Image (cartoon, rainbow, N blue to C red; front, side, top):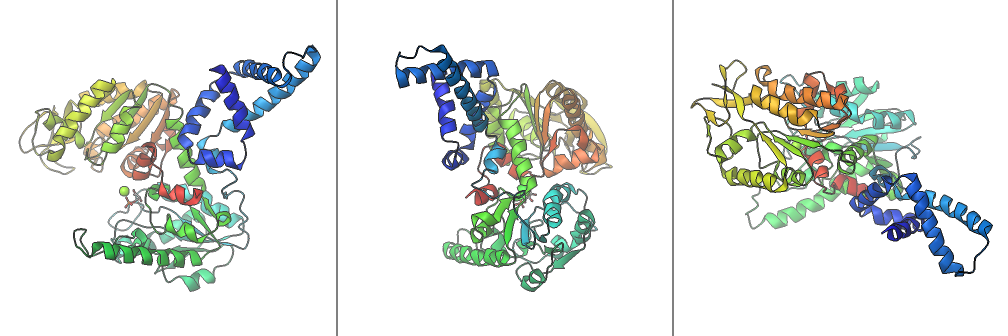
Length: 518
Ligand code: 3PG
Ligand code: MG
């Protein structure tokens, strides 16, 4: 075993070149697992291994002839240095893998006199007056945007907002956030009202100037899905082919605005769209790169997955089991405690024969809920499901409320939040944890009356974090919760990703990252 490890250490060093990194880029997971194993080795073990390697080498090279102790020690000295370098090279965190020299990196690129087109995720929540209610995603992109401007570049910012399905919809216009972006950047931001007809505005940009393009999804080419035709329609395949061709043209037009492309849209990195993936084909390897936010997010996922300190507690909320099933099954192999809360509580309650009144429920997922309970049992995972809830007689902040068992909700009432007993169980599973992942609220937190369950989760996470846990919060609603409670600075990391974060945690390759890695 030791010999194999020693040989691997030497092997890693011998290949600490382009080929080695390329191989590992294709196999991040293997590298981080192996790196994790080596990382844990104390230096004295490293030295012992090196001496072992030395003796093998000496025997191989000169047989049993070497008698001079001095020669042996000089050789040992050099091999020790050699092995330390090998160890350093093999400790390739995912961040290092993302920024190795086969890829351009934003900190090395010379932006002076260049135009940079940056894909950000400014799909921020707006209130009925078009005011931003949570600007986490804008703040998240600032380091990249500022870096380009501060280094003499001109900026073209592009994003989607909502799901306009290929049609112009003023309610989803990015014009609504232009002023907020200007304020955040401290620079006047010009606006291009048609993202595919911004050639002149882009050409006129000077160093230090900023142009924001209108919502990319006003064009169906952004998503690349044919509109107005059913999947069952025999003409669908033809329409899809035609759309893929015009998607390339659309991406080429966007690319023509700039000298280089940066993807900093982690929240949309799980989508293979014109601006997140296809566009990368129109830039050579030296002129496309990931932004700082993207690098930070990938590193945060790595912190959770490659360095799990136990107990590991995951909290999955939200209304549907169906949208979270992939991640729930994946987490089942990793976590010690799994809290399932929010609307899905009632699908579980009904599946187990409970009475749930008017509560939200996926009737076609009852068996799935029972399977999850069985899986948790088989894998020894402590599954925490709500036992009581705050029920309301209407879906409103001012509704009448009462605390009832989650499996005995009176007719005409619906579960809106976790009850006091449940909150205690949540806190118990969270407070002692050393790694925590939270996605999805425990109740209808948009209504102040029903924030109690989510607040109990946030408070327990803050407590655990203060005691040294690593806590990662992702998904628009949970992030909005943490911000609403003013507790953003009491957790380890807040991700700008929802679906993207979950897919990264499931171990899926994100197309937005893959497009740059090549
Ligand atoms: C999000 O909010 O999850 C991202 O902006 C991606 O949006 P989408 O789910 O509409 O692709
Ligand atoms: Mg989404």
